[in-house]
Length: 213
Image (cartoon, rainbow, N blue to C red; front, side):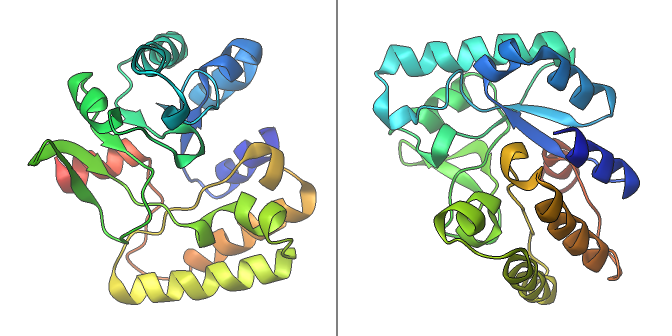
């Protein structure tokens, strides 16, 4: 975690950290450090169980509890959310909108953001798409990729998204990318990205408010 924070500082970049509520309770000093360095905190469930495995009340209470815990660190309303394991239930979007969240980040069917459809209408809950090929866990644990393979793939993916002027949303896990060699991979893609004009690293809510507010 701290290696990633140091790397972000070196690149003068701010990020969004989706934090599990139980993890915040166990490692409060880590969350305090995230906030003190100017990064955003978003909800990621109270445990890391997908919401599709929870009953309705468990899901609701888990979101509320994690938000309450994280707001004690963050000092302001948390409006961003990512479902644990990217596994929402059929209730999740409706519940997030009801609770006043501005954005969610689970789905992989698009490169551009979109407002989720809830009960047959376009909601006010913005979806920030993710992708398996922009997730460190997928490369290192699921596919057994090398650091070189990973940074090469991300470089090519960035080239395509830069051409299309679409969002490039990396998903990093501290226990994965925090390893020394993998941190060099993150540093490599960040250095590559900064060679291009009209590119900016942004916190998720900052992006939503600037371009979708």
